[in-house]
Image (cartoon, rainbow, N blue to C red; front, side, top):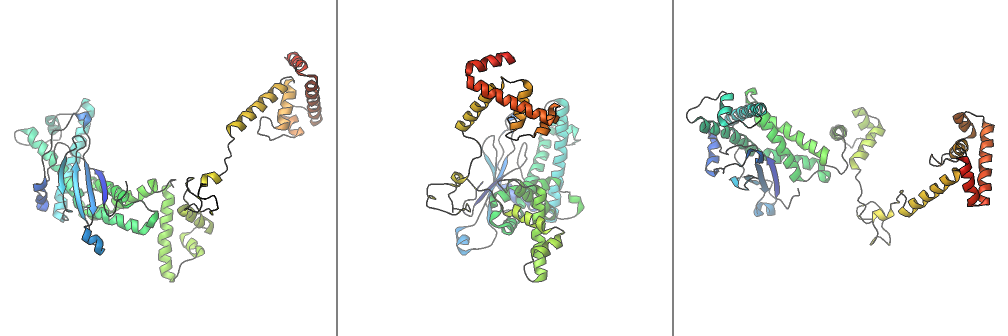
Length: 416
């Protein structure tokens, strides 16, 4: 996904079930006027997870002034089954208080526990359980009608998860921008970084334990950074580097920055290698991994290819200057024809004579010939005997070749 101007369009899966209603927990009531009722879902096998899309953009005035103020966020939940939009936020929601985070996180954890029970029932029954069966299995005690009240409780858990995600999108955007600034032009586009960061935010919402006492942003920061770093490892380069290479490169960058601050100058390769506990050759190899990128064969020389342009640069490409080691179809056909002729000639010799000539001239080993002594060890004779067999076989080939095809065919039948 590519960024257009200052706008960044991203998508992340947000799990919902039968409804999307934001619970009235603390200041979360500010979401309620923007909620629209959901249409009925399709069959169970056709259900898909809604997509939480948002656009991060600055107003035209802020763009002209170069303001660093946080952008407004347009948030929309889209149902891929019906194509309908349910919730739309014109601006980024306010940050949650600690009490709101605890209340919403408890609803999310309860919803996750209930979902685990539903999956267990589905595996046991071989089909999706009804709301009544699901409610009884989780020990839900509600009023009448049970299905309607339980469905509302399930929807509250889904809405709590969406509220925590939407309230922390600015954290994802901030961390993605910091990563982009630290990596420079070799990093992924900002849109991809934010999208991967949102996936980490969703995982953080699902795993956050509110009873431990720390704020959600502290916990989510680690997950967001981890998913962004893994995305850079997996899709950040045309040829993927292993994760441990990326970790080593980050260590080199971090240690090099701190060492330069201590010395007041740029650290040399020897000093940096000594601080990292690496050899200079290993450090240079890591640098070569960082800055090496494949060159497109369709580029023209001098156009970012690293090759010196010439008079034919306007029509030639890098691929034209690369020699192909594979044979052309004509060369392959000629090689196979010659090999077939050689096999026909050798067929008039005895098996031992064929073996000696094939090993002596490398006919079956890509042109790698064997010595007389090695051939003798292979067939169990002396070096002098191998020389005699070779000479006799060559004399027969010369004689039969001079006599013509009829004599060669008669000799071939005699050998058989």
